[in-house]
Image (tube, rainbow, N blue to C red):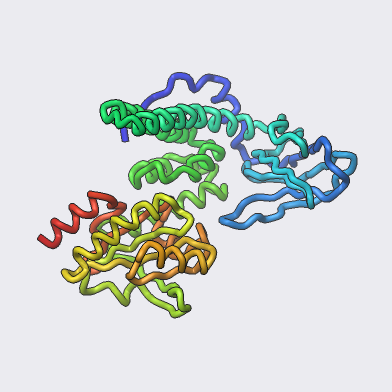
Length: 369
């Protein structure tokens, strides 16, 4: 991916990055104000995989609450209330932080005092600027498609791809240039689907050892290691999950004679459902010649999973642990977004990844010519 240097990373950004990443023995104090709230319990929590983990709890009285604690590195938390609608996200570091929210106005959120939060807001605002332009182009594309203006559609598609490239380059460059930034790593960790292995590996190698203990650095390092193990040219990694009838099925049970497309998908994933007819077509064309599919669902609900298999006429082997993004197989294969797939040859070697649409048809035509 072409790297674009952004001169507008101004000195103030450099300042709060350098200030926010140092280890500290000082504590954080979060002064919470929630307008319109009844007296209740307030919770400081964080997301770990698909679970919400409570870090601390305290009483909210007259709309006020205080959390205190110590962090070795900045972490992304959120504040919520018992039995009342409030979600107040914030990056916490060892500072005195004022967090204000409102029961009646979701836009009435404000966090001050956290240097890490300032950095996070800067990165997110910059990313959102690109996203707003992408959404606008998406609407223009729909209008062009409605008028069957293929020339305009192609032009908009090129603009969209350029914006997407610039957005991913902005974040990548930011983390590479601010190698002591835990906050930058956190944002990149939630956008790893935009990058290839070489780029992610470069980020991990560039990070300052001083932040190696951050949970986000550890997670990114683990993710890159997982991706390396299932890179093209590597032997497949075996796993065992249950089929829709509850029977354990191993990937190794189908590898050895045919070319196997391991397809990571879910019933709730619209791009996956849109790709399914293409996989069905490929399966019908090449199954008798030695092609098979091994479907791995990131679903949570058994009935939805089964219904999607039936509705989309997916007649091959299916497995899932119904753990959503905590799928054991998904983690093994470094799945960062779906649809995601790997193609395994009869010798058990991964020969391609993420081939969809016409690319899948062309690859199979080449194999079985």
